[in-house]
Length: 130
Image 1: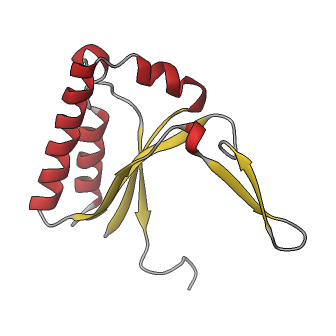
Image 2: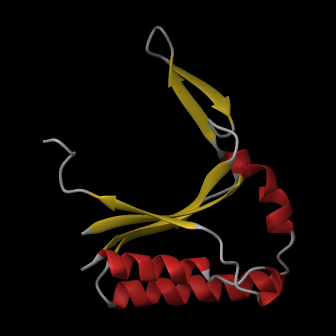
């Protein structure tokens, strides 16, 4: 079964959070994520994964009355934004939850595990009701 595992962060705290990481903290964080990615890959579960930029890089698009894109800078809604994700194809929900827990344990500033909330979304083979 495929799952999307998402890390979300408060949009209004993005710059402060990123500034709180020292160069060494960033290296520890990347080492943790690279080890997680290597494990997912070695198990044949990897589909895709990306870290994303902060709210300053986000564009929100709506279709105008004429169908043309109306573009605004920033997230569509106040609150959390998607910081990164994994798409995995795993044997069970328990394995997806295990991956999410490892992502949540990513070291933050000072090397302390962040315990950030991580969402796990099952991706059905077909839309529900079909």
